Length: 109
Image 1 (cartoon, rainbow, N blue to C red):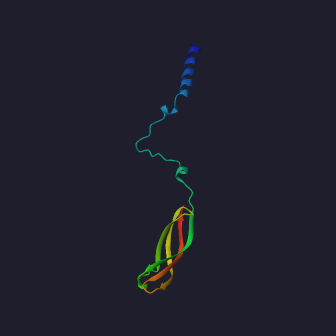
Image 2 (image 1 turned 45 degrees about the horizontal axis):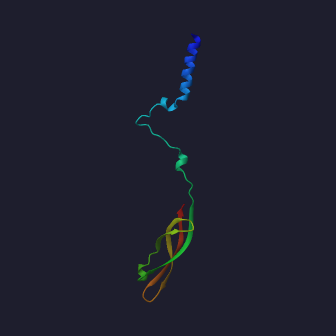
Image 3 (image 1 turned 90 degrees about the horizontal axis):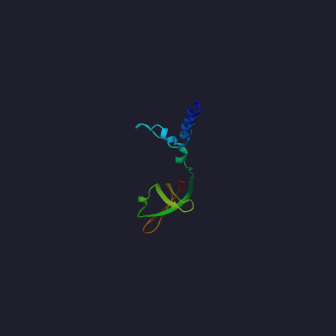
């Protein structure tokens, strides 16, 4: 009788090891929050930048702003660089004015 009971107990133990352990897992409640691993959401970032000088044409010197917002896609870094450029010089031509802006633009990769 003891042998038969020990075989039954061993059979139950062996079958419980073979079954998927998720069968015995408790189902989450409705208000349970499932948190993901933070390492999945984190990616390395790097800020890159360049000094640029651009020129823009205006009708008169009164229309030239002190600062000019500039953005462009840089193929060296494969990122959009942007920033505010400060006026460097204003060149008066006969029918228009050329404003030269200079400054630092940056972007995040």
